[in-house]
Image (cartoon, rainbow, N blue to C red):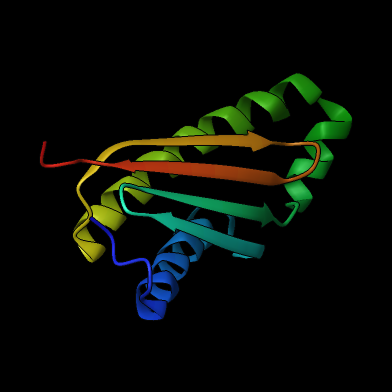
Length: 115
């Protein structure tokens, strides 16, 4: 169970999310909001457009979308590992949807319950 009233927890959650973004893309998010429930966390993030993505989109759109897909999969894996290791979360599943056209990502984290 997550302590939803903890600003420190929200700050650390945002910090880990942005660190993973910086590791993979070279910069953090331009907007990040969190919603915390007792057994779930949702992050709404607007990512910055990479110059490489813009070039790929113009030259080879199919490749750009394929790269976006795989980078999102890598992002999920790294984020799950970091949140479990650094925040001690027991994550049952981490789901992430990313819209390349708007650069928005929504990440839903369902936590393991003791039942």
